[in-house]
Image (tube, rainbow, N blue to C red; front, side, top):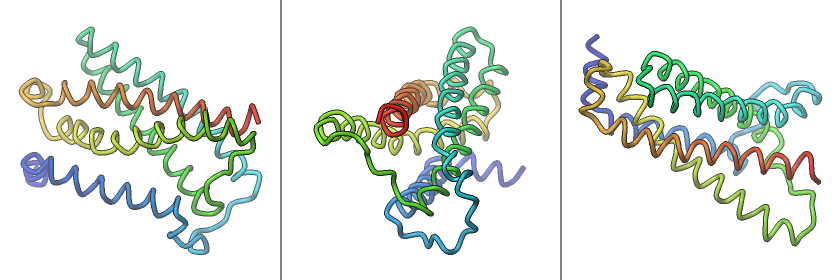
Length: 188
């Protein structure tokens, strides 16, 4: 309980540290700074399946975030908490799979026409990535607030206000991620 008390008093600092570590891992993988030879290589069929699994994870996360939002509006706090924790687990699963694939193979090149790449794909990808980056500290912040306080104290914190913004941006980011997936693997 003593560590929970310390965490409770340092939510912004913990948010900053966790966000920095998480984003460093993501950028390290995308920029190919992380050594691909240091992780075991799965069979090609498994690596090739990661984008499809991640699209399904994203769709499931859209469902759990939406459900969590509805539950909290109805005052069903236990169901809200379960939905948001499920969303977090889905996000972590997505991120682990994404980082694994990108560390091994790098980002997937866009296979479609140059015009679509410049006018549609890149802007959508930029918004998706930008929102995902913004969401990381927001999600850590609301999660840490929720985990370090009793439910009765949460209304006295910025949990509701920040959570509303985080959930909105998270939904948009996951949705755009599915659109990016469709452009990379279904349309082209």
